[in-house]
Image (tube, rainbow, N blue to C red):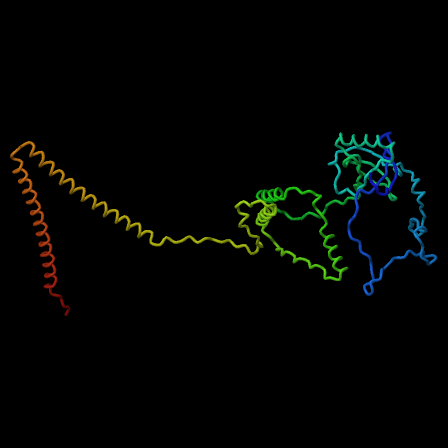
Length: 389
């Protein structure tokens, strides 16, 4: 049971069912409040409530509500006047409809309250409404009056209790006109894929683990000043570029998120990504090395291969000639018996004679060529030059 002072007492009107309830705040502020002081001597600055007609300070008990008319006339409104307003929601949370929760725009959300059952008689109808909301998977839309005005509310189940969120009226929510960038931008699929990867890497978070770091830092400053010590220095702000390469920034963000979660980053482009301003990016062209001496090396290789082929051909020809000569000599010895020796000698003589004849012809040819060249040279020298008279 909540030991919080109720801010409103009334009943929930659920058709013909009336549920007595107390309205208590569901939230509390932990922000640090400051007092206004005189900087020269540290004295408190206070606002005093003074009656303009009597020119004297008045207590809180003497202060009421009043409405200022257009001509400056003040119309006094009492708490009794507000309690007897001619509307059904003066002391009633009047449920008007049940709708799916996604029909409510979060922009309409305002203050949050818990609805506490007002005594034992309210227990059963309270639980009845709670279980009906659970089974329908819907929220209740209601009207109620609080602090001098009628408001809109949404009732939903939180744990075993019924909570009510104050809602703004639809005409109190501004349209987002002129807020979105008024430029044509194309988002590539690869950029969306990287954004999805970053969202998956960051994953979910337990909201209970989040805390107000600003308040903690402020507590440290106040404690240091109270102890007469120097307050802690703020860390240096991280340098931020003006215009970033979006793809590189996304890749580095995914890599950093994985490292912060203790996951090994995959060896991809993110490992070598660099965030640079778009104006400083340069296109680097790799120079292709020239093929120096490519044709020469090719022709040399062809010549070498030709020489090797000629040499191998000469060797194979010589071997085949020797083998054929030996085979012929063998066959003659097998067929003629004793005449094999004379036949072999005859063949040998013929081969020797042929070699000598070929050599002599080659020598004679060279000599003839030399004589012919010499005679031509002599004829050129002997020819007299004609002189012009």
